[in-house]
Image (cartoon, rainbow, N blue to C red; front, side, top):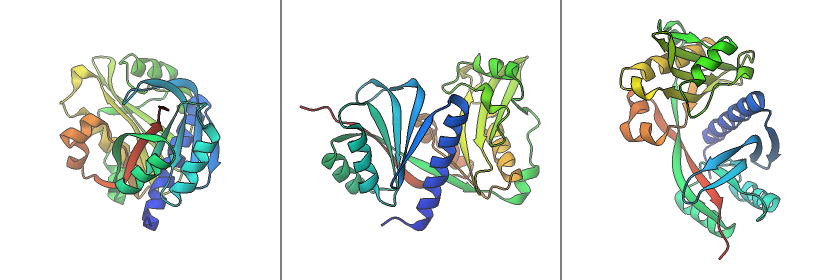
Length: 254
């Protein structure tokens, strides 16, 4: 049985991701018992353990993962390539669910969290600025980030995008989803390869945290990349693992 706190973290994550994709790309959503389906407007790439393109991903929380995952499998069967993000389930239960419903475990990640203090709202970075115009969006996307900035985010009150410039060009970007509750979500962080290991990521994170605190958030969550997990970047900033996240894909029939 999952702790009630896990429910809050999971739904904060699911609601933030849903809002982001609905605003930025017009994604469609459908609720499941204890879960949610997001259908994207564009193809996404899944790299491993097998490569395929998909538009649908499922979020399954810790309340009743059997029901949510079973509903997802019945919804798609063998017809649609999709990815399942499974939260707050032990490895043994995850493996049992995957075997029963013909999924393959791709990898395990974690949702990390950090508490925010009211005083952090005033700690604004001087070298970080908001992304406020479509011209800013174009400049940010010239970096070639993994997750491009979207013009639709500029006017949305719950999506706050920022960038750092060097010599007249954008070299780092970040986004935080705020205002959907007391938990904010860092949905994107990217630094151009030429400017890594210069402290820009730390400056960007402190700005995102300050923005979240200023909007009334008491906690902030994120899902680290493989690289940042390896080098302990977020741990050095005070984040700690809070909720497991497993990525499942449909198994290939023998």
